[in-house]
Amino acid sequence: MHRVFIPFSPVTMISQAPVLKQLQHRIELLKKERTRLMVRLAEFSWLVPLPSESNFVLIQVRVPSGVCLLPSTEYMRDVCLSCGQTCL
Image 1 (cartoon, rainbow, N blue to C red):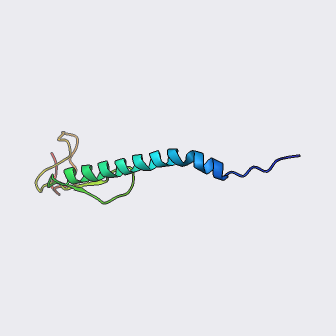
Image 2 (image 1 turned 180 degrees about the horizontal axis):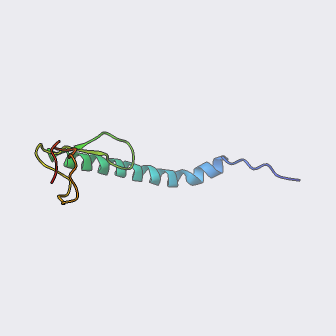
Image 3 (image 1 turned 45 degrees about the horizontal axis):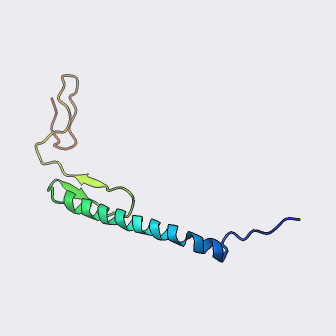
């Protein structure tokens, strides 16, 4: 005869309470650090951190006009996406 196992018994939930509390504390620490990082990154005029609740920070990089990000080589003669000019 098989016994029925109740996965969420009161005893199981009580024993997991300290672990859940510790995880919640770590989550709050990560949220605070993400907020702190976003504030610091926003201090740079050319960086725009986008709001997020994920475990990464998405940043929009604003390139000043006239600045080309493509490497300059004799083989590359593309139109630069950041400045709209031909990069030589």
